Amino acid sequence: MRLSGVIASSGRGRLNDAGIGPVLERAFKKGKPDAVALILNSPGGSPAQSSLIAARIQRLAQENDTKVFAFVEDVAASGGYWLACAADEIWVDQSSVVGSIGVISSGFGLDELIAKHGVSRRVYTAGKSKSSLDPFKPENPEDLKRLEGYLSQLHEIFIDHVQTRRSGKLSGEADLFNGEIWIGQKAAELGLVDGVGHLVPKMKEHFGEKVQFMKYGQKKGLFQRFGAEIVHDAIAGIEERAEYARFGL
Image (tube, rainbow, N blue to C red):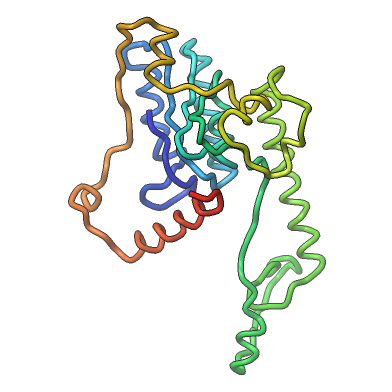
């Protein structure tokens, strides 16, 4: 089963629990497979959706007593690596990018721009924190401190997931949780993955030369099947390219 793309709660072509969940259910239950192999290619995205998908994979594996293998193509970083850790074993290409165990929040500050054009921001709230991190207002130290707290909490959840799923495999050689990325064999040396290996040879190694594969994936919508494009898709495509570009891809 292929898990490819940015992880987000909505948007066509995005990975999220609502969209991928039913397909995962079929992959684990139809025909009672000996194993489920996930082909991963994701630069990450939503922490919540990453957690939901990973939890579903782990639950289905336990309920069906099925081993899970993850095979990374270009990248399994940030939320993509979160998904990879849901597997019992993680295998990569020698050029695959993995890691980026951290949390990021980004945006724009437009307060000086609107002031330059004589535009004033008027916001009315009940609750002093209701308009925190408003991009049209100057940064507030209290808002930044609160945001840092949120990010730290999410980071700790991410770290705990990795340490639990990779228990006994992680190396103490480097700080693995500072948001850095690693390539192929180096990631294996640090215990982030189990080694360099590809889908078909590895599955033959485990299940014999006559191993059979059943492919699962999300069905394409009407517009996708006929190659139709809309403005939203164009913008989403630019955003996705920006996510991959963070890892030199």
